[in-house]
Image 1 (tube, one colour):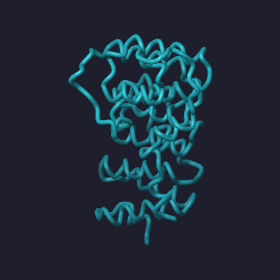
Image 2 (tube, one colour):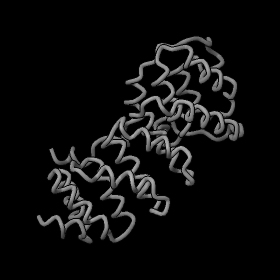
Image 3 (tube, helix red, strand yellow):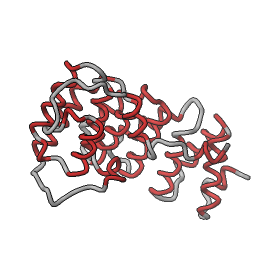
Image 4 (cartoon, one colour):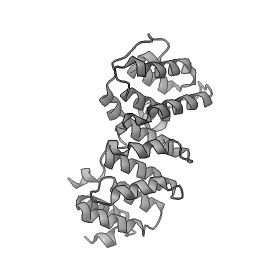
Amino acid sequence: MNLEIDLLSADEDVFEAALVAAVKSGATGERKLLDALSSARDEERAAGIVSALGEAEGPDGVAVLRGIVAQPADPLEVRTTAIVALTKRQGVEASDVLLGCLIDWDDLMPGYALLGLASVGDDRAWPEVLQWLRQTLDSREPNPQHDFADRTLVAQSDIVAAVAYLARHAAGSWEKQQPVVQLLRSRWNRLRGAEQRWLTVNWSACDPAHPDSCTDLDPAWFADWISEPLFEALYLEDAE
């Protein structure tokens, strides 16, 4: 296999195999990915290479991913893929970038940032996420006819991602839980049915039909739930 050639191949199977091989090749593979990124034939191929950088190892990949996320001129598909890749690669150390994306000009970027924060983010974004949740609920009109599918809720609801982040960092603290609980109870009719059902099961105090009290939340459960399947290994899994 010649990574330089295969990473630029028009054959999709050859390209995908080269991504796996590059991830498996440590710093050498990362360099091949970065070289190929500058010559990617289209946005889809560039996004594929960026995705692989999320599981690669080497000295330069993290800085490149951070640069892509911060560059509004880059294609949206590449930027959102870079958020996922950076979250997978840096974990909690990506929290500063994820926080910054909450005010990105493109409406899709905050949703991906919320998923990353809910999965791995530290508590620095707490005020901003709570404010984002408040503003989003205030701007959403009640619509009982519009619902999400329960099985794909994690991919459809930015609100659930925000709540999962807040839940992770509220744990057993009523002082932190109370403003979230009060916000959701007061705007319950603005939530979609699937969001309401998820909250009733996983944070029942947010449901006005249940007692308004401190809940013993499991941060690991919320992180694991939000992480599947978006932040699961793709290339390292194939390389094993």
